[in-house]
Length: 302
Image (cartoon, rainbow, N blue to C red; front, side, top):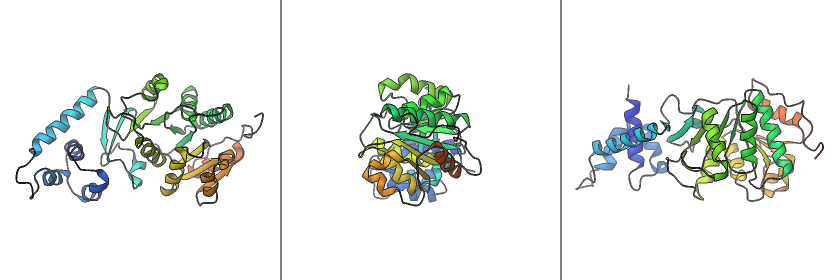
């Protein structure tokens, strides 16, 4: 049986080499019985007359780096380890390593609640109501810790005593946006802060679409509460369907062309009331059901 900690260090060392990208080596790594020979090939390949480093040195550096992260309260897990989130192994864009603060576990009853950063009061209220109802029925509320809808969903889940998972577009030791610093710390203490980006990674434009892809894979369903024509939620919507996940759109989201085009796709449900949302979420989480039917229609009093 392979030494999983050693294999994890080997994977980190391999991905730390210049020019090595997961998308290019994923098939090789996944099919290999061990990453160590593959690391040796990339470090001391037949075409390399002057090896750039000894494999043992690379492994030592990776092992030290992981130890430093763990000392800072950051958990590092590779895709082949038992406590790596099982649902992420199902997606084509599976992150090879995930970094986390908090309680890492499988979350089969997880629903992403996402939407606009510049949310309306109505949108914030809807996100709060939806996340509250989900959390009260032991459904993990997943979101991206952005301002607006994301933050409202996280706060509502925490207030209701439920579990919430924040999937970041930065390292888990970075705070972005700064206004959510306390919220991020509370999620780490009571739920999970998760990232595919190594600690220290700053916010980059390309990181957030990647974060949305991972979030869509983590959750059994994505609920889009409110979004703009160019919202990152549209990326998550498309990838959720690509991952075979359920996509639930509140009717108001259809004002956007991208959402209207998706409305008739298999796996997409457009909902007008909490009753309809209840049915859609229950289908995504079968055989367990979720009851949101006691809540008012979305447009009541708004």
